[in-house]
Image (cartoon, rainbow over all chains, first blue to last red; front, side, top):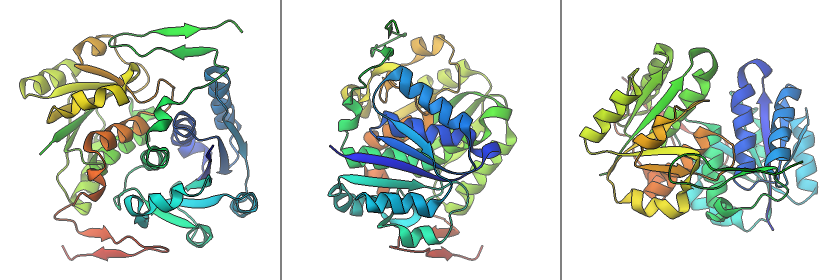
Length: 177
Length: 177
């Protein structure tokens, strides 16, 4: 079973709260197993992601690690390939097959300014288009390509709430705690 | 040639500036042709998306339309299918083939709270997982599925700046205005 962890670099409490939360929630929904928040420590982000994970089930854990280098060292020591998503990188459509051979992947997504050393630390610098857009969108396409669409059928065991797909309206199931 | 336009509902100037900008920039990068901002009027968002489109090329236009109903009426009159992305909808993996038959699609993405009428106005209510995550991620997966990955090779004619993919570092080309 593949193990994908997302490292969010350079988080700034004031500016990035919502986008960083989107990064981690999208990661969880699309099959990643964990997240690491770097940059400014932000307990509100950690807390809100944990609450979603607890309520909606599945296995997604998140932690803070201020040092980018420490996070990457931990990943490499544990057999993770390091994939840095950047508009300057190589085309995902040409590299995804090579990345898929690795069962453990640390996906690094930056906020505004990414330190130059990240390009060297990464095993792959990968672009989801060479256009300026959104790290949330880039991560979503990366995970979708990596898992080949199977992530859309993922289960989330232990959920206290779940939605049943419906043509119109809302169908929500809840379980007692 | 397919024509995809994104309608962003319920934008709030204070809260949504960055996420809404991500929605439109991801739309442009992943092959959409235009955007409609609804909710609060926000010229800063329109302006920043237009600046990117002008500098980085391609054809992406954006406008403001305060009335959700007017926007949907315009779309239906012009032959667009209306696809509402919502965690409550039907599974994208089961509905995308039907949506792909439509060459013009208005993709509706909400902010926090979506008016109930949207579920009825839409031709398709579609979920990119039934988990809570990010409208930016949902839109990215939708566009990637709709275009079948061909959007990753899209060209952006008339660009004043472009990036050449590279393994490490940054390769930027600029043209005189």
